[in-house]
Length: 137
Image 1 (cartoon, rainbow, N blue to C red):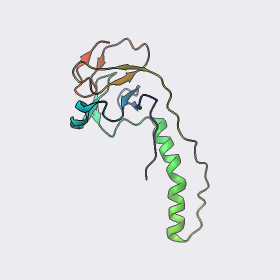
Image 2: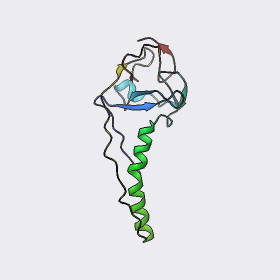
Image 3: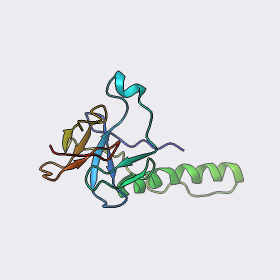
Image 4: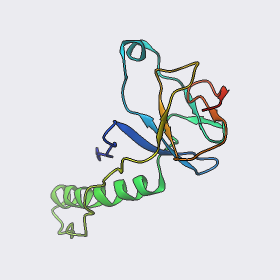
């Protein structure tokens, strides 16, 4: 089952580090021809704490909660249809998520084709999303 998680107006998707639990955003999809030919990494590095994690480990708590809430009514309706049993699938379906246009765009000097957004006013060094190298903004 697919549940759409929105991006902001610049096509950045909110992410949450599974280690430090801070939020940032990464760009969804290639930003140029160079990015389109780059292989997808096996892991990404948190730009804020520098700890790597698998590519599927970056969902925010709110995104996971939203996805579950959006999926449950459809799953119950499908079960009801397949089993012939009446299963109430009219539980509250949340309204579509809206992603605010917050945070500041930064690009690492080593992988500029993978821009990120960090919280406004973040004064600490930042780690490259792809290789973990530290850089200052």
